Amino acid sequence: MATAGEAAAAPAPRARLYAGGRTITAVLVLEDGTVFEGYGVGATGEAVGEVCFNTSMTGYQEILTDPSYAGQIITFTFPHIGNVGTNGEDIEAQTPFARGFVIRADITMPSNWRAAEALGGWAKARNLIGISGIDTRALTRLIRERGFQNGIVAHAPDGQFDMADLKAKARAWPGLVGMDLARDVSALQTYEWDETRWRWPEGYGRQDTPVRHVVAIDYGAKRNILRCLADLGCKVTVVPAQASADDILRHEPNGVFLSNGPGDPAATGVYAVPAIRKVLETGVPVFGICLGHQMLALALGAKTEKMKFGHHGANHPVKNVETGRVEITSMNHGFAVARDSLPSGVVETHRSLFDGSNCGLKVEGRPVFSVQYHPEASPGPQDSHYLFEQFVEAIDTRRGA
Picture 1 (tube, rainbow, N blue to C red):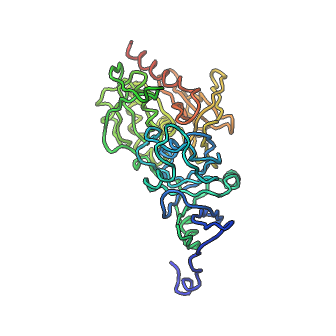
Picture 2: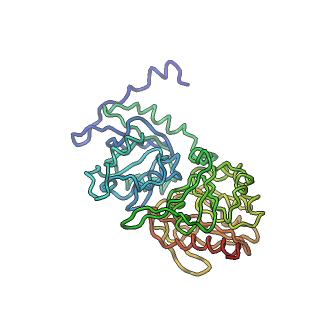
C-alpha cells in the first residue's frame, strides 16, 4: 500500500493522448512496463490477463469464443481482423472467455454475405475489450523474445489513463501458472449434444440416429469438437469438468472424450486426474484434445510444463512419428507435455516441427490416445479429422460392431 507521500507524488491520470491528430482511447500495458497506445474497440473498461499472439489469418470469431483462451488477451498477427463481421453460427461458446484482444488495423464495415453484426458492436455487447492501431509485429516479437507477458488492456473514450495504476495491475496479476480455469468455463450441469458439422447449403444438422454413446468431459469444450463426434454417429453426453468417475460411468459410455480447455493442467489435474484414472481402469476407449491431452498425460504419470510463448495459430506443422506424415494443424496452448516424462508403455505419436515439443501420445495395446492440437479445425486445416474416425473405430472394435 502506498504511503501518503508516495500518493502525493504519484502522477495524475494521463489525459487525452494524440497520435496523428486522433485521440488515443486505449492502451495496452505489459508487466515489464512497455506501453502500446491505440484506439478502443468493443467494451470500455479494463481487463488484465496473459498476452499471447495468434497467427491465424481467418476464424477470429471462433478464436475469441474458444474457452481455451480464458485468462488471455489475444494479439492477432494478421492485420485485418473484423472485416467479414460476425454471425450467430461461427462461435465456439455462447460467451467469450478471452480477457481482451489486440489488432493492427481499424475494423472496416463488414463485407461477407453471412455477416450479421460488426466485430466492434459484437464485442461491446459481450463486454469484450479490444485495442486497435498498435504495432502488432513489435508486440509479437517482444513476446517471442521475452516469453508470455501479463498485461492489461484499457479502453476509455475520454483518453484518460492512470498509467501508474495500470502498470501496477499488470505486474500484480498472478499469471496462469497454478491457475485452474477449467471449472470457470465448464458446463454447470450435464447435457446432451446432437448438432452436427456445418454443410453448405443446409448449415448445421442434427444427429437423430446415433449408433454409439460418448461422454465428453467439458474442460472448456469447443462446439465444433462436439459436432465432429455427433457427425460420426455418436450420442454425446457432456459432463462438467469436476465430474467424478461414477458420474461419467453411470451413463454407460462406449467411449470417453477429454476436451480442450484453459489454465494450468497441473491445477485442473487435482480433481480431473483421479476421475480419468478410474475411467482408464474400465478399458473404455479414451480420446483427448489439447488440455484433454495434458490431463491424460498426467493421469498416465507424465508431467506438464509452461512454454515460453506457446502455440497459437492454424499453420503449425506436426509430424506423425509413426507414419512420417506431416499434418498442418490448429493449435492453442501455453503448456505442453514434457516429452522426457512419458512413462513406460506410453509412446509419443506426434511431434511439433516448430520446436520439437510433444503433440500426441498413445498407450501401447490399449484404445487410449490424445493430441495436443485441434483436429476439429475451427478455425484451421482439416488434415487431422481422421483422429475422430480413429476414436470411433476404437469404440466399434471394443463393442464388436
